[in-house]
Image (tube, rainbow, N blue to C red; front, side):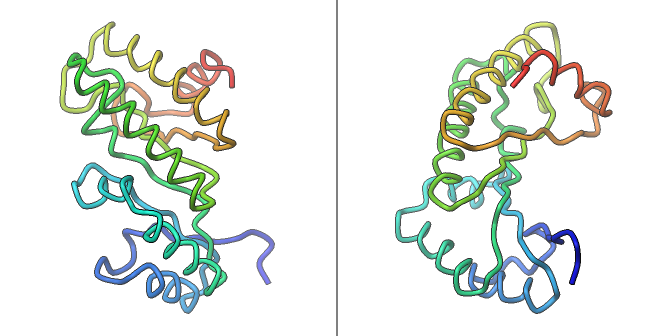
Amino acid sequence: MRQHKLGIYEKALPGHLSWAERLALAKACGYDFVEISIDETDARLARLDWSKAERLDLVRACLDTGITVPSMCLSGHRRYPFGSHDPAIRDEARRLMEKAIQLAVDCGIRTIQLAGYDVYYEAQDDGTIERFSEGMQWATALAASNGVMLAVEIMDTAFMNSISRWKAWDELIAS
């Protein structure tokens, strides 16, 4: 028996499987948990609007297989970033965050991992960084009030490409 649990990212498994099949496959391969993906594709963003029955399907699959889904990779903010120059995109970023937190609460997901981008498809400037900061402060408070932890993934851009860069944000957000 392992001392630490070992998980697999959903995208490493075949995409055509139901959640029950996906979790059963993860179990058969020796994994203890699966991380769900809410990326910037319409299909995965639509998961944030799952019905109560769809959410229950995931919870039942976890209970039936013994494989949990304790974390969510929410990279949908790459398409709808908190730091965007466009107020409509920033509003959508907040809606996505609210929906992700509710999905997490409903399905027993304890951690939501965000991509460390202030913007991705736009030019970065002081305003994008300030708006990202505001969005992260807001998201952190909302997540905490719902018993959900936020994490930030170190990314491939200079904005947040190292632990030391993240630590500066960690100190600023101070959650």
